Length: 65
Image 1 (cartoon, rainbow, N blue to C red):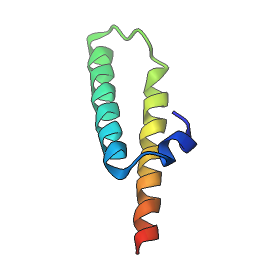
Image 2 (image 1 turned 60 degrees about the vertical axis):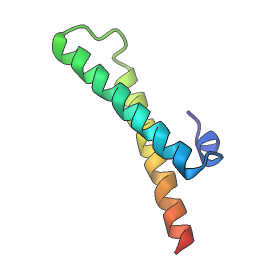
Image 3 (image 1 turned 120 degrees about the vertical axis):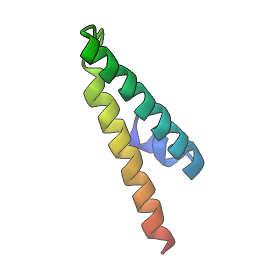
């Protein structure tokens, strides 16, 4: 997901998106340990999106102070 798209979302939407990405990462990790990951490139993409969301949330918190 692009950074600009994420900046347009509200705080609640960002937090919901982060939760869903973490659930997806958890499922991928389960597949990894069972030995059948169909899309191994998704690990890095999901981690990157989570980091983007956290960065945007932290920037919003700093702007409020």
